[in-house]
Amino acid sequence: MLRCAIVVRIEKQTDPGSYRVESATAVTNGSSESAVYERYAAASREVEPALCCPVEYAAEYLAAIPQEIIDKDYGCGDPTPYVDAGETVLDLGSGAGKLCFMLSQKVGPQGRVIGVDCNTEMLSLARKHQPVVAGTVGYSNVDFRYGMIQDLQLDLARLDEQLDKVPIRTSADWIAARSTEDKLRREQPLIADDSIDCIVSNCVLNLVRQQDRRQLFGEMFRVLKRGGRAAISDIVSDETVPEHLQQDGRLWSGCLSGAFREDEFLEAFAAAGFHGMKIVNRQSEPWQTIEGIEFRSVTVVAYKGKQGPCLERNQALIYKGPFRKIEDDDGHAFVRGDRMAVCDKTFRLLQQPPYEGHFEPVEPREQIPVEQAAEFDCRRSKRRDPRETKGTDYRETVASDDACCGDDGSCC
Ligand SMILES: C[S@@+](CC[C@H](N)C(=O)[O-])C[C@H]1O[C@@H](n2cnc3c(N)ncnc32)[C@H](O)[C@@H]1O
Image (cartoon, rainbow, N blue to C red; front, side, top):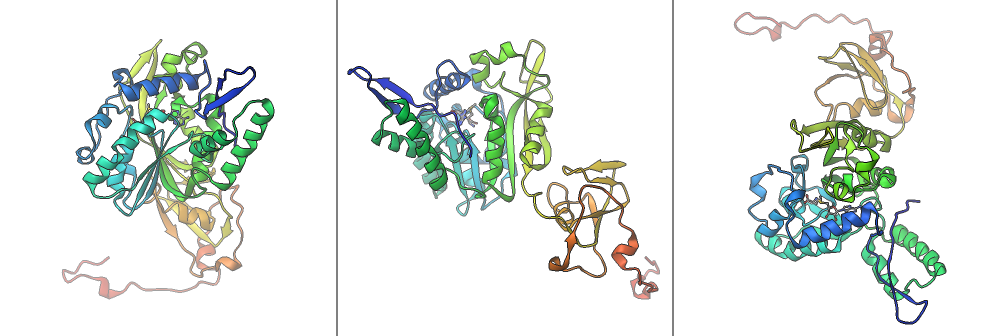
């Protein structure tokens, strides 16, 4: 069961010992979460230039977006090129909604965009402009939801409703509230399992507490459909950020000291079960440098869908090069030019994005139906003897067909 560090804001009442829950706002005093909350609440009221990292967005989508939203953009990259028409997209930490409003146009009227943010003031700002953008583009396909991105099951608006009915006064109430949370997660999740084609995020993952990051990536994996992808722009560091910088709430909330180290960022996707991670954009010059540590924006695309049974259907893949040898996310090694034995799942997976074009597929002469296929041992890489794909009894001799000679006398 996933758990989230939701802390209810409790207000002391005039009669002694009585407390009223003001809201389920995700705030803890003195923590990085409270620093983030306060900073972005303020940045929703007044533009904060220090939070703006220069980004060149696809201009075609900006005309429909109100100036206030453009001004209160606190992103650091543009994941919109990795989203397709008709898709259901989830924006983690949607802020004032700029990315959602751009994606609304990219996915078109058949697609949907869901923005999740835990800052009520940012949500209000985005929702205020939502009808204006819908009026300009001619349809409404954006939905802003209240939640924490590391706990996409818990709908904080519904939790607020429950807490209004049953306020927390004692620790026993608090224990009961935890059961309410679990029930909401189970029965009315904010984002359902396997429901999203593409997750995007712009400069938000670095703001999530270290202890919640494994759960954050697990949640991203949970909500994506099989074959879905994440396109995440975020700030990364080139070295480990020391503790004293991480303790600085201003640097943390400013998207700096919570930055993932760039290699660990990619590793976090792999640990959650993603495959095919690719850095599709990396600023060559750092956005900021602190104590010699460089902070820059990257955009990474990662895929869900390598899980499942491995079946032997006598298929092979030939890696075309240019490297002498490569290895995929499951440890299968491919030697340039060699026909390597693969299971049915890997055979299909490595012909799809982001691998398409790198391999030559070799099908067996006689197909093995899926229901008759034995288990394939995916733990070791081995070559596929051509006789395995052609059959040991294959003895045909096929002469070249004269018909393939061109009129000019050239022959293939
Ligand atoms: C740097 S701003 C980026 C906003 C937006 N993506 C953009 O490009 O302008 C970070 C946003 O993430 C939200 N945020 C931070 N931590 C969050 C969390 N754990 N769950 C949900 N939202 C979060 C903040 O409230 C804020 O709106």
